Image 1 (tube, helix red, strand yellow):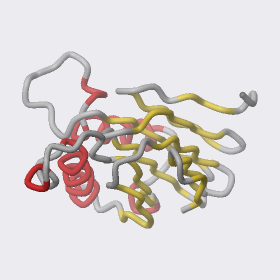
Image 2 (cartoon, rainbow, N blue to C red; image 1 turned 45 degrees about the vertical axis):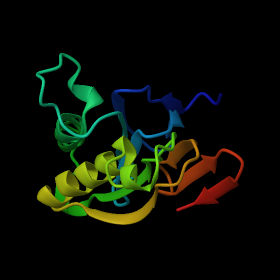
Image 3 (cartoon, one colour; image 1 turned 180 degrees about the horizontal axis):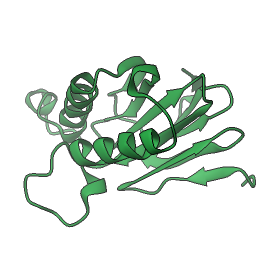
Length: 160
């Protein structure tokens, strides 16, 4: 792994600036959320597992509502403004099939809905998305260009 690659673990987020790259592995039903400001060439990446923290769980980075809010605050401390941030999201797959009726209730779908709601509440525009399906993904955000590389198991690489 390159020296300027910042690894984001499950139930975690990290922020950084160019020339660093942010990477997270193993997105199944989890969602990777990237926030990027092209003027500052800086941003963050979160790897959330669940939509909302209704249980007062001690690890707030596990949940979309709390992790995204904390990541935005850290980015603002770096001098970024929410008005200039753009979001890209990937993941939210349904890794196990329990029939068509479970499609909308799957954790991946609920994660995607929660992430979109939280970004909308913060007036952060989603400029690209690769969610759903039933394959795992790895994502890498280049903080110099803002491009998000997505490696999907069995389907190769794409950039959004």
